[in-house]
Length: 266
Image (spheres, helix red, strand yellow):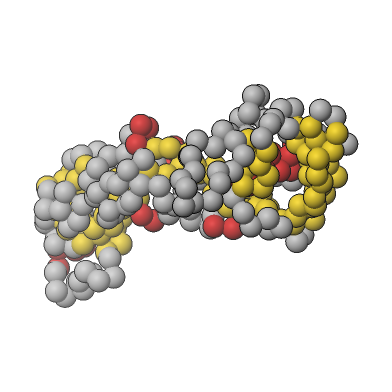
């Protein structure tokens, strides 16, 4: 019989806890003081399944028992889980729970339930607002079922550090990558130095940022000479590297602005 619970609860495992509430005359008699809780059984099964390489983190659910207290006694007992099996495809498990006292079997019962694979992901400790910079101490790791983790969910704490949010994000919930942005180093309306480099030429001019952006972000910038609006990558709080191609929404034709073809008016 393989043992997953170590001996005498209430001592080493603290699975049996004394029942502290006293009974009143009009109430039912109190439960025995040593109690095996449903949550403790689920945690033990989950750890055993993880040890069997079902997944790195496994959360087990007992479906064969509905009460929060699985067993209660007036004295410490020994609890063993035997014959633990699982079905990976159906995500189910079965086991036998044997309770003994002083080497004698008190009761034995079958247990069954389902399980789910989990993964540790980063979440916020508390709510943040747009503009708040996420620091390492704003982050904690929680176990989440893998079926809730889509391709766009942030799974690495490094993806959060130094970022800010597009809008308010509550603490403790799953965060998606598109909810995060780099902190703005250039604000809308700011004057910036625009550069464009090719193997054969270097063009410099000045422009106006048409939106906020952080380091490495692509933002729209208006050339102060030609009024052409282009996409530009933020290099520093005062510099952007632009593309000669105008944005679709703001492009103007040569007839509208003849300076577009000048050497310094990209």
